[in-house]
Amino acid sequence: MTALHRDTAAALAAQVRAGALSARAVCESALAHIERLGRDRSGFTHVLRSRALLRAEAIDKIVAAGLDPGPLAGVPFGVADMFDVSGQVTTAGSLIRASGPFAHGDAKAVQLLEAAGAVLVGTQNMDEFGYGFVTVNAHYGTTRNPHDPDRLAGGAAGGSAAAVAAGCVPVSLAFDTNGSLRVPAALCGVIGLKPTYGDLPREGCLPFVHSLDVVGALARDLGDLVLVRAILRQGAPERAELPRGELRFGRMLGWFDRNITDAMRAALAPLWREQVRVGRELQYAELARAAASVIIAAEGANFHRARLEQDAMAFDPATRDRLLAGLLLPADDYLRAQRFRQWIAARSRAQFELSDVLVSPAVPGVAPTVVDPTMMFDGAPVRARSHLGIYTQPISLMGLPALVLPLAHDGLLPLGIQLIAAPGAETTLFAAARHLIAEGLVAVPAVTD
Amino acid sequence: MSGDIETGPRRPTEAGVAARLAEAGISAPVECIPGIVANLIVLQDHVAVLRTFPLDDHSRSALEFRV
Image (tube, each protein chain N blue to C red):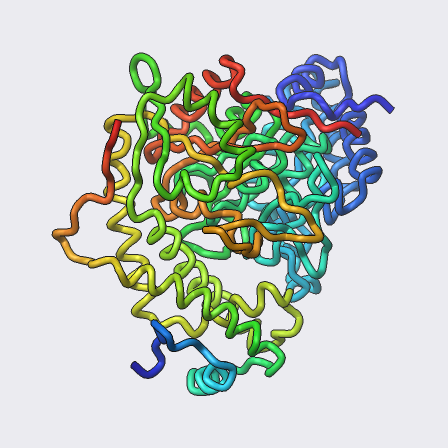
């Protein structure tokens, strides 16, 4: 079968709207590819075959009636398994919730994409409750990196990034608490948007850390990501204007320039040389990471306390012990972390008086291997599960939007950067990304079957 | 500082963590204690970093610019 689903979302929708391609054929193609790859390589843990085919047929009937199904007509998409899907259990990667409750309706973000014509084909693997950077899940397996199945996809939303990179769907919806979609986007070589806190609707998503969670999206094509964001925002006005004149890129130094692998440093060199005029030292980044870790441990533990006490052994051990440790954090330290967050979030705004976009690596290097899920940090090997997000965590704490892009380079494995802008300045991130793509500094690597 | 995370050379122990869980009214299987200790040590390091920051209104800007 021809891989009909491999095109961009915009191109697929244009063909379906024009009647040149049936939504059912696109859907069948995507489902066949997911099945062919299997759970670990497709990123999908639950395929919604019946629902997807019914939905696709409905789209075809709308087209046949001479009506317009919307800008995402017939586009297959997936969601991390923390978005509610009507009649399904939202497992969030756990067994605790596997027997229910069943969701009464679809998450708001799912509703909005389907109202625009898209077709939900399944839910995707993640670290249990979103607590980790690896997508090594004791219950649902390890999601493999589409560029090298012996390597990690990254996490927590590794299934969502792998599904896009592997060509199962052009778009996935996921979440980002502390780097949850940015880390796997970087390791799998796709584009990932972590929006400003509160920018996209979270209704119907299982929370992990209420004060940090955001809904975001992953895609292979920048235009698709822009389109999906616009649909999810329902026409809300932009909060920031595009800068006048040439965009000013600033390079993040200090914390963001430490622990970078040689491969990443070499791949970044053309970007620094050709686009960046200033370096910016963000002091207290280490404190920001520490504060984010304390907030996540405390809020995550608080949210799951009842389940932990009821049946701790049903949790993934890697999640369980972290959450139980979080229950022992003094309230004073949690409040200190939140006060620091207020302080640094307010001061981070000043960064954007002299730069429109800040640039840093999204991860230190290429994906670690599955058999040895470690990385080097300050000269010592550490667990990738807790350390792959060293560059994403401080940005989450500040509530800033970030866009992950794959660097164009000669290596075989993806290397991702993150562009960071002022709150509400997502359109500036998109303009910067278009510029870097046009300059040949950024490119989404292809995955061969 | 009863109930506080120990800093400096004092590190959580399995016996200490079991006692703190009991004092806090948290029931956790004994098999979890070594993992909790390991994760508490990581959190202890984060807390130690966080406590170096003087939270007052006169803190200088966290941001420095250099060309």
